[in-house]
Length: 86
View 1 (cartoon, one colour):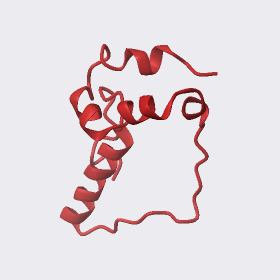
View 2: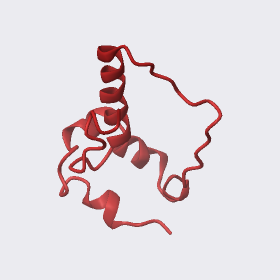
View 3: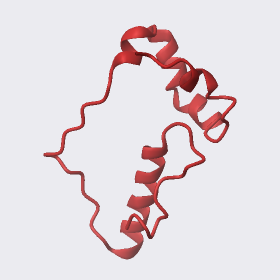
View 4: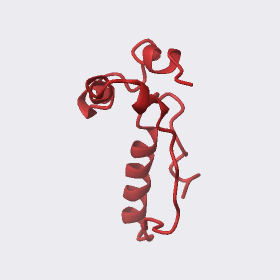
């Protein structure tokens, strides 16, 4: 399925996982394949950026409308990637 939907889009700078899941789900429905969420798999993301940035700033950068406006723009996302939180 990963190969059939051509994997993640390398030109997306944000929400590439959500876009990939949408294509994967559509592929599953089209082909009659199962679509499942693995409940026993846990991912522990880093919260450093959330801890360092204000709530307003995080809401701005993760707002779906804002994300859609600049999905493929490296210039738009330069502040997200240039200011590495360590």
